[in-house]
Length: 206
Image 1: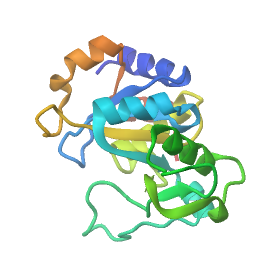
Image 2: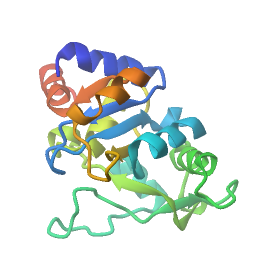
Image 3: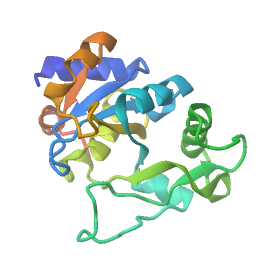
Image 4: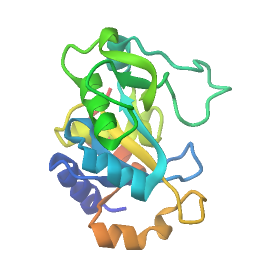
């Protein structure tokens, strides 16, 4: 993916739109839908549930996780699945069943709000936090870290909502499988290798 493709993805993220992340090196090439958490809406959650079909996750920094009282379910590496999961969460107030698109968008907004803490969320819930590595995508080249670095580069906060994409037959999609989705919904693609190259060239990151 060219630098121009990355620029298009960053512009889309800055505008509050959904993009596709490709090139995850830890999950066999799985691809993800992504939007900045600060731009999440019920419509965005519904789009991910409809067209992604995977688990809808909230990628957060270690600092945000600590403020929310979240820790990794499996702190070591030998039992990790490719996703650094914390316990699932729900907004403590303002939700009904918790699983509707509106409820999940509300939970995301509550979790990333300034001053949010453990009292603002309950567990278990229907939003699945992922705790990124401190060093970002250059330390761990996966969609979780990439989504946060993309949001930062786009000036769209430091948290993101991501959802892996499945094909119609239930197998995990690859970028060549989703040409129709990209075209029909004018989705930009952010390739992790291009993102890492940009960060290294600019000396950006932690």
